[in-house]
Each structure stands twice: as structure tokens, then as C-alpha cells.
Image: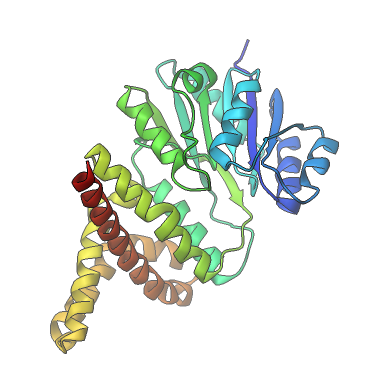
Length: 324
């Protein structure tokens, strides 16, 4: 028999997004064995609607974040494979079957992660930019992954339970999936990045949501994880050209402040554009040249606050060593 797939969705006030996510699962070419929605003490009626749509609904005792909710769902799942998806994504018709195929075909493979597609639901600029950047990073990342992704990530249930699941000290959406992936790889487990396993992101991003998430929920805790593990893989958002871009953006800022922008500043700016030309070309191909040009300042800001996040994490890490 083929391995059976249990879908686990952590949900908090997911509203219409969750309903659309469940509808997409019902349209799959291969239906999962079960869909488990773990309601993290929502105050809307999304859990009621999920139950009406045939999902198994569990409820956490207190609002403890997606890490705890996913662990609860995994513990009650009956399938051979756990497929975690976010409550604001829709699977493609072949997402479940591709997950099943990947883990059935290679017994040495412990987990697979997918990617956002290049047609995010929200048509607003910030949402398009954010989701297309995630899509591009996963499409160009190494196929032998160093991390896990709970937006669309599947793992053998036995491996998940043996690895003790997500770290529940992350009590809000953060890097609980990245931390979990780092533990898997450190234990010799194999994770494969499969960009052909796609989901559509429904979330509408605002500018301040992007900055807050990138700095406080991703940047600083991810940098602290890198410092604790003493490991910075040359992959995904950590590729060498990304690190060089951070240095050049700070050089550009310094040159602008000191009044030396005309020559060296322009050179630094052109260097950043050259390093990220493949990404800007990707944006231009999907949304046009004006969109790609408009994204460049936002991408420069992204490199700026990534450097800021690492600096804050370095200070906090040094302070913790001093207290030890």
C-alpha cells in the first residue's frame, strides 16, 4: 500500500482563509487520509466551519502558538506522512500526490518542503513582492535542504515523533520550523526542497507586517539560532550574495551620510543590483519591469534590516555569554 498522508493545519482566527484551504484539499487528485485542524483558541467561527467541512478539529487548552498546535495534531494523526500546511494557503491539485510520490520513491528521504507558487492571491504590491520573493528563494535553493518549512512541509510521522516535533518555546509564529529543520539535519536526517510541490499563499501583506515579521519573528531569532549552532549555510536567504548585499547596503548608507555617494555610492548600488539581478529579472518576467524597479528600494531595505537583525542578535548572544 502507498503511504497515507495526514494533513495538519494549525489555525488561529483563520476565517475565510481556512475555508478556502480546506476546499483546495477536497479538490486534490489524491485525497489525504485525514485533515486535522488544530484550533489554537480562536475567537471566530473558523473551527465550527472546519468541522462542517469534514475536518477533524482539535482545540488547544490555551493559546500557545503554532508549534504546540502542530505537535498536538501530529500526535493524533494516523497517516504515515504528516503534511503541514498553513491555514492561509491553498494546495494545488497535485500537492498531496507529489508529497506521497517523493517520500515513497526514496526511502532515505525523511522530509520534503515545497514552495509558494508565482500567482499569490492578493494583487497588492507588497503581497506580490513578499510572496514572489519567497517563491524565488525556494526555486533557486539547494535541493538538499538544511531547514524545514511548515507552510508546506511533509515528514514521515515516525521521524517527526522521534525528533520531538517543534520547539514549543516559540509561542507565536516564528522560526519554529527552521529550528526543527536544523535539528533534523544535525541528526543526519535528509530534507529535500521540491519547488514543484506548490501552494498558493492567500495572505495580504502590509509594509509594516513585512518589516515586523522579517525583523522580530524571523531575522533576530534566526540569527540567534545561527550563532548558537555556529553554522550559516550558503543557501536560501543566507546565500553568499545575500550577505554581500547586506555589506554593500551598509556601505551605501555610510557613503550617503558622509557625502561620498556620487562615485562610490553609485558603484555600491550597482553592485547590489548586479548581485540580485536574477531576482529582479524574475520579478520583471512575472509582473513587468515597472514592478521590478519599484521592488528594488524595498529589497535594499530588506538587506538593511537583515543586517540590523544580525547585529541585535549578536549583541544579545554576547550578553547571554557574559551572564553564563
